[in-house]
Image (tube, rainbow, N blue to C red; front, side, top):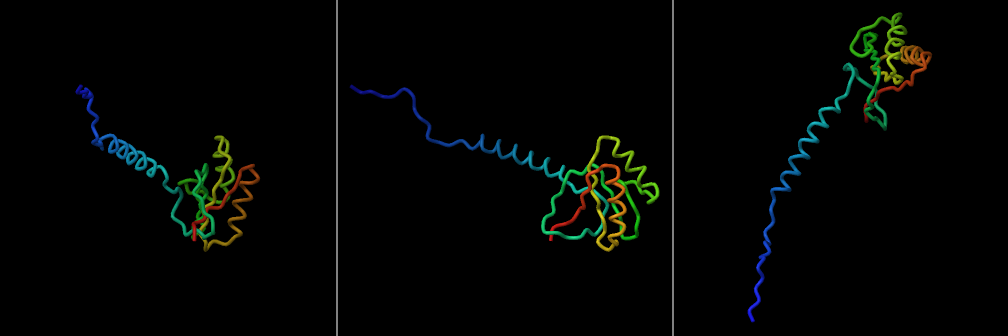
Length: 129
């Protein structure tokens, strides 16, 4: 009695599904990397041991020339409170300070005090060592 199987098992391995998965992962990481761009004006930030890039709500930048910016908009110091109040009224409660390391701490404290008086959570941006 000669019994032969009607179904032959293919022992080969197809790489087509693996290449599809790799291609989809490549697209995902390419798109995800484009969304993680640091925000803010170019200032020389101080360093710290831990530095996380947050998704900031409101960026306040103080340059080495003592120019104040809320987002990309240049603001005079006397107008800073009203501009921050307007920005905070849009349900944004986080303020991230980007302060050049050559700026005196006095200016940082002024801006942080204004933001805190408006009931905002204040963070200082740093770069890792």
